[in-house]
Length: 310
Picture 1 (cartoon, rainbow, N blue to C red):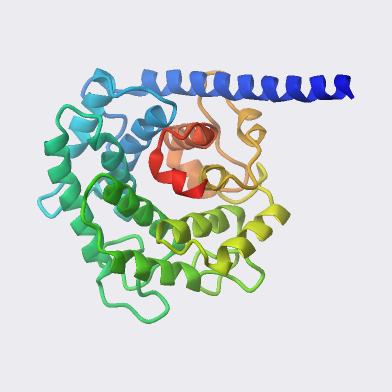
Picture 2 (picture 1 turned 90 degrees about the horizontal axis):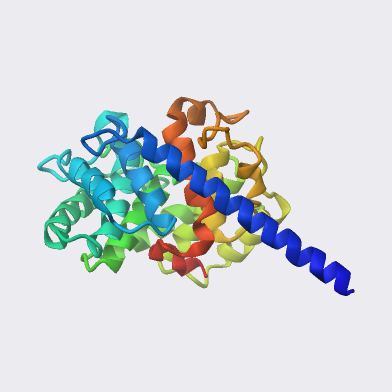
C-alpha cells in the first residue's frame, strides 16, 4: 500500500513538473516573438492572448507586458472596438477580458478603465442587435451579425464578467440574455452545441458550463448534465479544436488531461498544428502556444474571473 501511494505521489509530481517545464518553455518562445513596439501580430486577439498567457502563469505586469498593453489600447476605435486584423468579435471579447484583468495591476489604471468602459459598451451594443428568437442574447463574428454562436458568445461573457469584477457597470439583464442563448445551445444528451440544434463537443460543453455560471445560473440543471456529458467525452488530441477546448475544459476543471498538450509541444517551446482543426492550424503558433499555456496554468488561479468555476 505504501509503495502504491509513493508511486502515485511520484506520478503527480512528475506530471506537475512536466506541466511547469512546458509552460516555461512556451513563455520563452512567446517572449522571443514579441516585437520592439510590444506587439506580436497585426491581429489584436493574437496580441492579447500572449498577455493573458503571461498573466495566467503568474507573471507580473512588467515593462514587456506594459508595452504590449499600450500597443493594444492604441488600436481601439472611438466606438470602443478591438476587432482589427481580422479578429472580429473574438478580438473584442478576448481583449476586453485582458484589459479587465490588467486594469487593477497597471500604473495607468484610470486610463485603462476608460478604454474598458468603451469596450464593454461596444459588446453590449452588439448584443442589442435585433435577432430572431433562436439567436437573441448571443454574439457572432461581427458586431452587426443577425445570428449568434457559442464560441464567440463565451468570450463576450467572460469579458463582461471580468469587467464587472474590475468595477465596470454591466447590466445583469445582459448576462441573463446571454445565459438564455447559451441554454438554447444545449442538447438533449447534456452536451452543448456551437449553435442551437448543432452537435456538441468537449470545448463547447465546457464553455457552456462556464458561461452559465458566469451569467449567474449556478443552479441550472444544464450544468450538471453538461458535467456528466464531459465525463463521458474527455478531450483528446484529435478532438475538434483541441486548443480552444483544452482552455475551457481546464477552466471548467473537467475532461482535461495536461498530457494532451504537453506530449505535443515542439522543441522550440511552441505548439504545432492539431490533426483535425483547419481553423487552429490557420490561427498559427501564437494562438496555439498562448492557448496551451492558458490551459496548462488554469489550475493556478491567476485569472480570477474563472474562480467562479471552483
